Structures are given as C-alpha cells and as structure tokens.
Image (cartoon, protein in one colour):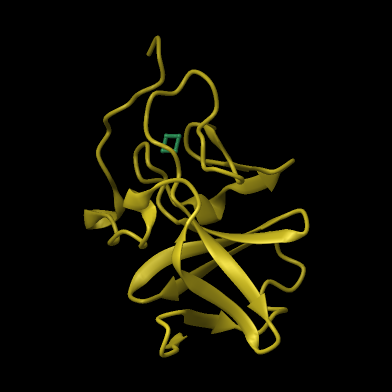
Length: 137
Ligand code: FES
C-alpha cells in the first residue's frame, strides 16, 4: 500500500520498482496510474486513455510516446500531447521523484496545467466520454 509523507507525497515503492519493464500499473491515493519509463525518466500517467478509456497498461512505449492499444493514438511523455489528427485532451502526467528512499509521486506534480495537479478519479465503469473522435471518422 502506498504511504503518504507529511508533505503529501505518496511513496510508490523502491527505485527499481519497474525492474526491466517499461510500463507498470500502480495504485496511489486511491487512483489508478501507470508508471512509464521514458528513456532515463520515469513518469506517472493516468491509466485510462482520455479518448474512450482504454487501459493504457496494455499499450506500449516507443520513442518517448505512449501508444494506446485501442485506436493507436499516442501521447508525448514530456507533456501528454496527443498525436496529430486527434481532438481530445492531453494525457495527464504526474512528476515522479526518485529519492534515496524510493519513488515518490510529488505534490503539485502536474507537468502541463493546473487542472492536472492531482490524479483524477477512476473512470466510471472503466470508460470515459467518447468525445473527441479522430478527425474524419
Ligand atoms: S481509446 Fe485510446 S485512442 Fe481511443
């Protein structure tokens, strides 16, 4: 179970939590997140795709982008931006702090905007709105 420190950070586990994996689903603060190895960085992302809620833990990470397994949109792991041709919102990302005592999900850890400062609640029934379909579909 994740522990929270007095500053509000949430400890996710040891620094080698991902092992040799690129993607690892985690629960933190009652939310479903995904740890993603992006080169030398580790980033936390919301686990449900902002398009139609696909489980991004079933996707893959290629060249700094997280690919959704359902419709193959991809997300830039620097800012969450969706690949060209899609009109739905960016993937919410959360900064991870690698400290001597392990990996922490920081407070105020959004990387791209104030509405992403905290992990969102899990999507109802595992799916989110279908708003924002790919242009031309
Ligand atoms: S559900 Fe992820 S791109 Fe459609």
